[in-house]
Image 1: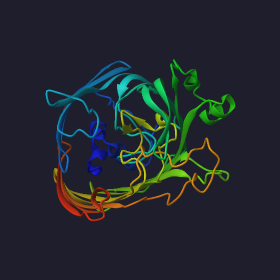
Image 2 (image 1 turned 135 degrees about the vertical axis):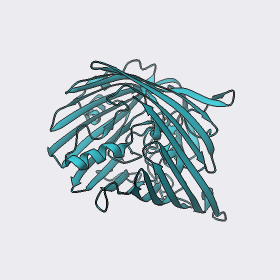
Image 3 (image 1 turned 30 degrees about the horizontal axis):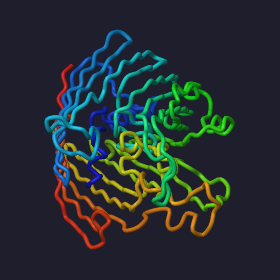
Length: 439
């Protein structure tokens, strides 16, 4: 399974993040909210997106998107169809086609409030294509509002996840208990502060809460509480995640740094549990060599047990897909991309290098915290790049015509393919995006 191509999968149906970054660089000012990407533009239009990938997974998807505005109200709907590729959402097919309504939302927007509800895909964080807190890997049923002023913005997001039925606790290939109808909810609140036009920073907190026949969890509706304190004082069973990030603009450059915390050991742990963290950082340059020239560089890393959990339904997943980074845990990746303009065309190249350990979000938890710690019942080994490491180096050429056509053609060199130390591969890849818009 090739995971690099999945990073652009549903995200190609969102507005291009680099478009807003280019506007910030041109103005020399960051707009709030900078890290909560809505999928609605300010015009009535129809987009038709066709996206095809030929790699070890071959697929073509087609998605017309209809947007309409009446006063402060806006609506969006996006039916979706795909032929081929069964590793990502949606995974069920009829007559050989995978299909769903990916986006179906209503928005209310004025100078201070952005309110929406329905079903949609989201990105929360400052990264270009993939964020550890929330990435557009799977559509979510949700309700959300953002309050914004010039110097600060606050976002509150609540989603009803799928129910869980199955093993309750799993560790070292041993299980305990069986649960039915666990109602699962995700809450995220995010505050952004912009002390100066060229710099802004943010703190986000996510809570995954659930219980058999839980009903509506009113714990999620208090926007200015701290989920961690709520869990501690009420002794609730929750999975809490934090995210701290900063963005800056200087001259022709945009920079971001993101520190993600799934679990941080602020005191010694009896079972020797390590920190479960991630770091994302990137740089985008625009117009500094020639008008229209773009340079992107970004690096991401997530440790071995990030998103995982001893309690199975608390794993940071929805419909068997990660809610955060599509690559899951136990990996790092570096990408360098440059695009040079020539009249209406753009030409460029991309180099990416990915290392991936054997751990997955579904890997059984290595210790049983219901039993006392011992040499047999404690975390062992490295906290990063476990087992046989799969390495992938990809070299690609890029061709773009305005914002209509993008063709990326390259070759990938694999070492320890699918974590088999005797298996190396060289595979070609072709990625074609076609997007038409009418206003």
